Amino acid sequence: MKTKTKYTLAALLLLPAALAAQTQNPDTTLNRTVVVEQEYAPLLRDADKVNALPPVDEPEVTPRPVEYDVAVSPAAQVPLDTLQAYAAAETRPTATPGYVRAGYGNYNNLDVYADYLFRLSPDDRLRLTFGMDGMDGKLDWGDGEPKWDAFDYRTRAALDYTHRFRRVDLDVAGRFGLRNFNTLPGSYAGKQKFTSGDVRLGVASTDADLPVQFRAGTNLMFYQRQHALGFDGAQEVLARTKADVWGVLSEGQAVGVALQMDNAVYAKNDFENYTALSLTPYYTYEDDRWNLRAGVHVDPAFGFKSELRVAPDVRVRYAFPANAVLYLQATGGRLLNDFRRLESVSPYAEPAGQLASTYEQVNAALGVKWGTAWGYWMHLYGGYQNLKDDVFYCELPAGADSYALGLGTWDTDNFYFGGEISYDYRDIFRLSAQGVYRYWDTDGAGEEMGVLAFKPAVEGHVRLEIHPVRPLRVHVGYRKVTRAEVEDERLDAIDNLYAGATYDLFPGIGVYARLDNLLNKHYQYDWFRPAEGFNFVGGVTFRF
Image: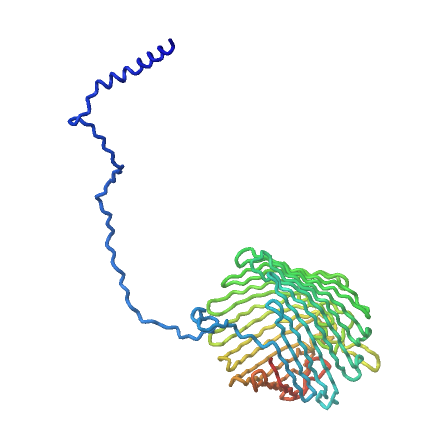
């Protein structure tokens, strides 16, 4: 029964389809339905339009004559691709690392100097130096005075090592000095000997990209005098530390601070130990025309002569387009009167006790420099200098049968003006001249003590250098220095005409000669020591 029902339902569902098929037209040869299929072809709009560019005129090239650069240029500036036939790499010539000079003169003058640079690696340098000079002969005072059998020899040796790191340079150095000489008959010191030495450790930044740049170093210095009135064998140990740190604010502008600290320790005398500081903050500005430094020295001291002093540190420079520079400065600062500086003032004098440091309260100057492309150069300047505790010569009581030349301190000041001029012509000859006038002053007590007696009043120096042929160089010069007038009297002026020459016999081998005091004048560079009369030194030089 169920099966019949299913067939009946299927027939009812198919009945409409069968009726529809019977109503369609039959597919005959006259009535046939054709189905056409073709590929899709999109419609292109404006296909008949042509994009046309405007006409272009061909550029016209006007031929010009070729100009060739015939100027001589160093080989290092020639592009590498023009030297392909040369396989070796070119390097700039370097100076010879070794130099030796040895000479002898008529006052048993000795002149020995040696220097050698070891290039251990591209980043390591080691330099060794040695020098010895001096004299041994009879010095003439003039005016019928008996001659003095004097000698004075100085020996120096040094070692300097530098290593370059990626951003910092390291330098280590050691130095030794020895000076043997005698003083005038009757002097307390008699034969004298100075021994000195120091070691140094320093660093300096080399990377310009660092935000803060710096230089710093420490020297440990030792000095001993054999004889001194009241303190034979006096020793001085000085630790000197210097540092300079600065940072760039913007292009051409920077701020920084410089520091110096000196710690002095004495032995075998009654000198007091002390510490001297110098702190200098500053600002700098530089562009194509202006160069400015504005700072101030703040200098406290502790121990011997405890004090606080202040001095300016200002420099202003302006460059004109016409190769001229106008500058103004006001500087100052402390000068320690340690044993080394006192020797530079005069080795034949000894301190009258422990001396206070000389302080330059101000050194103000205004000047102008200008030059030309033809080798002329000129400098004119003038200013005022004020010195507190300036060093001067004095006599010390040393007993009935002896005397001593001493050094003391007193306040002085001076006005000065001077100038320099020079002319160079193609390394064939060079003429230069310098001159300065100083007007010194001190208080009444200082005038009575002769504080200004050895001060220079007028200084002049003229020098001519000639290079007529490649192996020969000749120079001649004249220097004169008059002393300040004290109670209508002046000490003898320095009056020195000198000359010299060098000649290269072979590559690396030459001879030289120096002639001094050609006029055989009587004068003194150091008080209580006459200068040598006419003297000469001649010798040989080696470069290797």
